[in-house]
Image 1 (cartoon, rainbow, N blue to C red):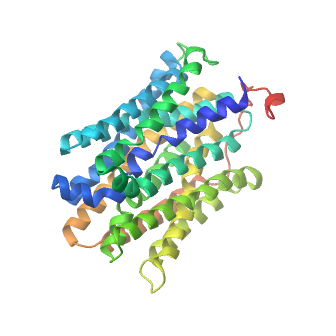
Image 2: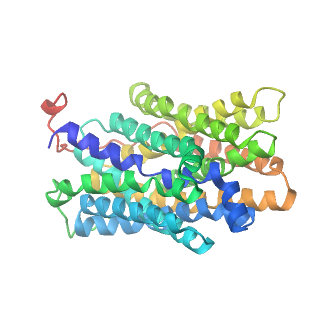
Length: 393
């Protein structure tokens, strides 16, 4: 199987992991007004899919062992497409929440399996994690940046949200070829979650804190800036900047860790950038600077969270298992973040308290990162399904 074809499939899958979530924030105030929902209820539009990403990650492991990761990824992409298309009819909270729930299930199934896909098919996992991360961030940026223009052009926020079903359906049908003739085989030998591994628990807590901060910002950054007096268009552009700046960072950080090592330094450095960004929001400087710094920190942490389980795994099965555990517990913890911000906003009427809460999470994350340390265990090299001679093809 040619490297270009498999890379295209990875790109298409990764592009669909965030639009169902990041398209919400720029039009959240319109959704709240039309459906008459409170801040805590609105936060469920992100909390639900993130929670599903945690709850269904272990199911992805068992399904992939039964049917093969290629078939499960294909099914999940089509599920995301159908769930996103459902938003055309989202004239009630129930329908909109149902779409978020179904999309979250699809995203939750794909997430850990793409790590196994990278470990199984590609001889240079770090480089492909960079590609994966960049595609994921591009999908998130496009959905966030085009949400308001699509709403204005298509006439409603429902059509704006449903637009991204096209991308998911194209990806799902593109994966059908590989699903029909997979290069991996299903196995009856179960690979269990690494529940006895201390390092796996540290990675899970780190992933949870990282996700709680990231999805809190993804959900509430635009409303934060709108509440600070900026227009909805300006707030949407700020969200776009937060996402776009993550693209080069997501590409460079995994390569830098792979080349220079010292992963704990990279982890802590990105966390410090997030803390500086939060503090800068309270200083008499341009908010664009604060958001850019936040984007740099977030853009580095997420690909590192994806990369760490792959470093700890000996093979694709273990990569699926480690990723399933870290993403299951991590996203379940992460789902609480946007909900807490919504509760604090409803209680206080401002975002200052919520921002300080995010700062506490960052401090805790730095402590966990120091425990994780620099060293990964020595792993045995697995022969990839793409020969090295095909790297330039």
